[in-house]
Amino acid sequence: MDKADQAPRWTRRAVLTTTAGLGAAATLLATVGTGSPASAWTSTTHAPYRYCGDCFVMFYWGFAPSGRCAATGSTHRQIGWIFKIPFGGGWTPNDQPDWRWCRNCFGLFFSGFWPNYGRCIGNNVENIQHQPGSSIPFNYVLPHDIGEPPGTQANWEYCINCSQLFYNGWAPQRGVCFRFGGPHVPDPGAFHFAIPVSSYQ
Image (cartoon, helix red, strand yellow):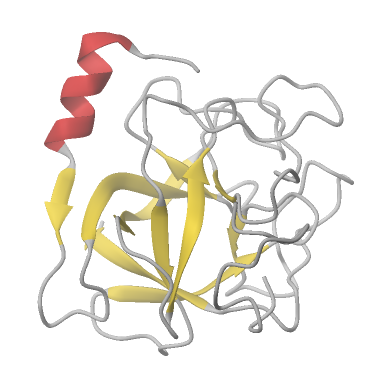
């Protein structure tokens, strides 16, 4: 996740199921949109993603129940805005691919350090990594280091312990990371993401 990692490299840091039935597939198709030409991103987007008010991660809100939260051990508690996540593009100076949906905890995690997929609370078992799911197969591409353009929210960061995307706008409060039970830990040399907003609530 260092800024030097702006292109794939075939090393340890290389850039590299469950199904939810026909109802989930219909939901998936209904929530795919197109980015505005005036936006900082040009790929299509997928919603609804939300912020969890307990663990601070970005999670997918389109299935019920809404995954599992590292802070409470229960489902995520959505608060605030609804986000739309770009997908389908590649590496650029301000876009990072290889973000995936975890089928167990429903969080958004970075898969570019394969085979290290971080740590997941989805099965409530220690040392289980995040698992991509075929229900949401997108390779998400996150815009970074662009400030906070209209229609986005900045201060989203990568946690070096669990590999999830978390909100760092209320530091020193940084939610809860499942790997060690403490707050999420940002990488000081990593990207700073600005996530597109689908609707304001």
